[in-house]
Length: 417
Image 1: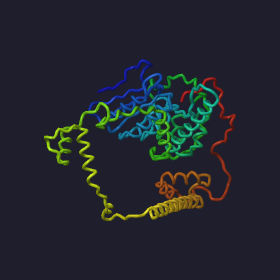
Image 2 (image 1 turned 120 degrees about the horizontal axis):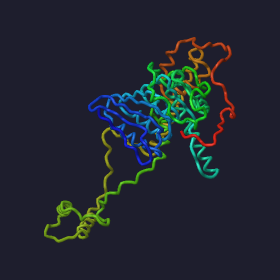
Image 3 (image 1 turned 90 degrees about the vertical axis):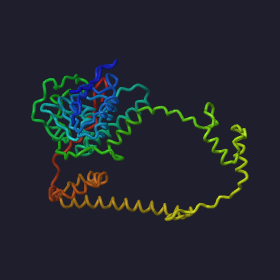
Image 4 (image 1 turned 135 degrees about the horizontal axis):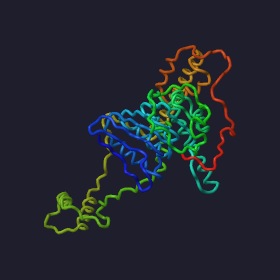
């Protein structure tokens, strides 16, 4: 067995290790501590080692209280990009950033007796009122994006997941599967050393036994995977992380201009070629300045007015007015097509509501789902008619609305995501 294990850095011990047999088709990746480059190894090192794994299957084992949101997003994107089949197994705890890292896996397995926790992004800040307002707005955007990731993979809406995050929701293994955050529970009991061994006092409830029942506890339809298409939560998160990474300095410009300082003189082959084309005998002793003067003289003698270039076969030449009119008509056509698609999606959802395939309250959700993924039309069409009573009979269940006071936090120190 060939084992790749990071050595402790000057700042702390590693929070992950990777094991792969030489020539094997599978690798084991362990995330078994707080994910934070300040205390240990940076996510960039993890991503580099992950990309070096040339295997068909990655078994990701997780027991982590979370850590840096940005490191977590980078790890999630790296797992999503890797061509291997990724199976994530929670061995003890998948909290905070660890809870959305595992959503990039092709399958998420909860070990028996394990827990999962989601909450709002948080940070420690310093500065004046304007700085704090900017930090608050940034954390709000980041939390909304993470809520979208849960919704994209687990079903439900981003608003539902944001409510659960604001309440700092803890899930048992079975509750995580029921909520759509995991695919199944492993029947085996978790290993003794994989049990939670972290100081969870920084959190509001410090474990499922101290927390209320999950706020989002409906049976969601877990989806096959995350998407990196433009506008998806995962793509948005990746873009937010990319903006925080300093842009490396540009490579030095190749110094190939013969008039720039420090460049080599004109090559012998180029000089000889110019002499031949200008009819300058080899015996004539001309330096670079004299050769350039000969070029200028030859150009001045030609005084040839270039003829308009003939259009290539199959090319249609338009004047400016015709081109502008064509562009305008194309834009109008695109707008009409988009409106047609929007009307079609709305009609499909209205029809599903009318024949009882979906509830009226899910109308907007399905319209948005069809806009993001046209393939959802097949799923919608496959729902059995009459699942939802068409006649209004009242509403029971769902998510209890919370007041601002219910969602408030009373902590002296902010939580680390």
